[in-house]
Figure 1 (cartoon, helix red, strand yellow):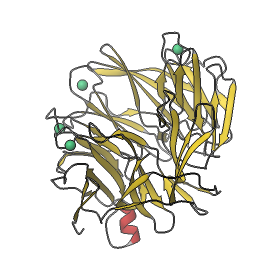
Figure 2 (cartoon, helix red, strand yellow):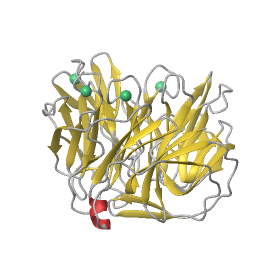
Figure 3 (cartoon, protein in one colour):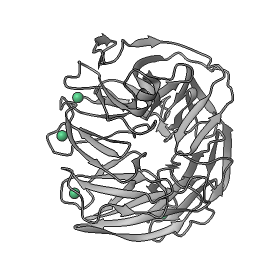
Length: 445
Ligand SMILES: [Ca+2]
Ligand SMILES: [Ca+2]
Ligand SMILES: [Ca+2]
Ligand SMILES: [Ca+2]
């Protein structure tokens, strides 16, 4: 790949084409492709543009597929870098689809080192997972952790490969780094899927040596990204698992991880294919953790983290599969549970499952809803990428803002303060529906 180095608006990027900054409006009729084993969803629909006075930076980072970007201080200078994983390098379309590319973009100065990096070609078109960014070796420079095909990669912050491990199965969800056993060192947690087989949760120590008892085998084909809750030296690890549309069952697993091992705390059927990343939240304010997630039943579930028993009023059914992790917003005594389904409807309930409102947004398959106080009125808005742009919805269920960014399918958004004094930017990825080009977007709302 030709290496170029350009500077614009305080941003440096190495190894990609020049940047552009622009204002655009009105996304035309578009299509969204969501790549998943044995599943390609095609969706349509349209929406007129709302106001768009904001500035947007765009960085080309690959083709066909892009994940929600991550940020971390890769070079130890105190300011964050942005990491994007996409499909990518090569001359033919198939070659591009079979490789992953990782691009790193810096705010204040050019990124030194070996970025972008390109992964080994896989059998068939597989996207890399979203990246996790964490300092595994304790040198104050974050590593970049992601899976592509059956390989889990760990790169140092300068783009040098540190370690890699092979799995039975395919990495398709974002890995995590967490000190599971309280020894002061992070572990890497990465589920690998196996179509018509059994998904496995791989655990490695910081340096790539296997954690005792790894991998943990699940009954289902596919697993969600893992979620952890830590209490003292004990970590609870929650993961949803399902078989796609082939079987209506699906389980939520909670494992307890302690020094020297792990054990299954409980497993409970929560609906079909519950692979929206579960979240630990005390939804009913009783001092005990609950777990919330979404299924393809389709439904939103809330269960007790203690034993998996459903909370009163839950699960609640919705109009389409829930791939996006639901949000819980608490303001004083009031709690709002918000979930987005693949039919493009955002729904909100109170903690007992009473429906408060619904609003039609756009069909989408994003991984995350973001809370962000856009107008600084001390009430956060719900922000997410959709086809054609980014939408913000108030806690009362009205669309207050819509940024039209062209014919792109967008990922979930990440609010980041890129320098100490900078206002919060929204970072997300998008794939162009015509050219299939993958871009990283930085929106200053
Ligand atoms: Ca930095
Ligand atoms: Ca490091
Ligand atoms: Ca540890
Ligand atoms: Ca609770």
